[in-house]
Image (cartoon, rainbow, N blue to C red; front, top):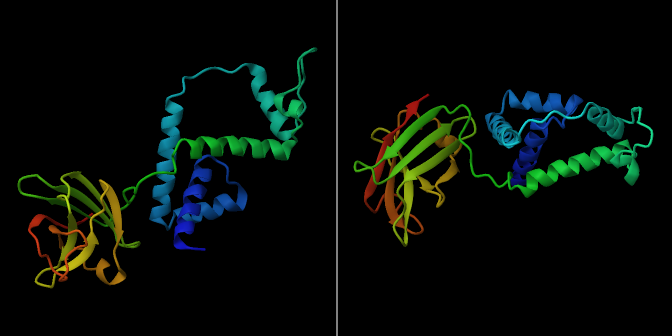
Length: 238
């Protein structure tokens, strides 16, 4: 299994937990991971916010007293007293037993989730970043908020102002004291993106300076900034 598929599995798992679809050992295993995996907590928080927003748009309406009984009967096979002449429940009419009924409910939930594009989310900020920085030009022409999570090496970037010139690229650099400037890579084209910082550089982030330079489309060919330094920002511990 690839790292990409692992992440996709975690996205789906977090959604199932937010919906209350995990039970027993599966829920306990997920909760144990939540305690030690900040990225997984961020996925769960994102799902919870999405589902809360969906519910907020639905006006409250009191159901009829028999609705709950009918649902329990359809899902769990519990006996329900029916008014004479009342038609059987929907699951009974189409011949679904308990197991298939549960699968049908799950399929409806999946259709809502996947059909609404909730999985097509961009990067989300770390829940508990260890460092932050605001990388900004003196004239405000480029402003980027950065949040770094040392344990995972994830550097989240949100560019609120500015973009690369046509045919050019924005490259991010790490400057630590009097040490050599180190390229962290090209900034994503999207307004929000992330980079994974290698293990050797993670400890050097604290107290460093992040800078953005104007470079050729493929990045600096020399390993050092070749164009103008457009913005800088000091990294501070959270």
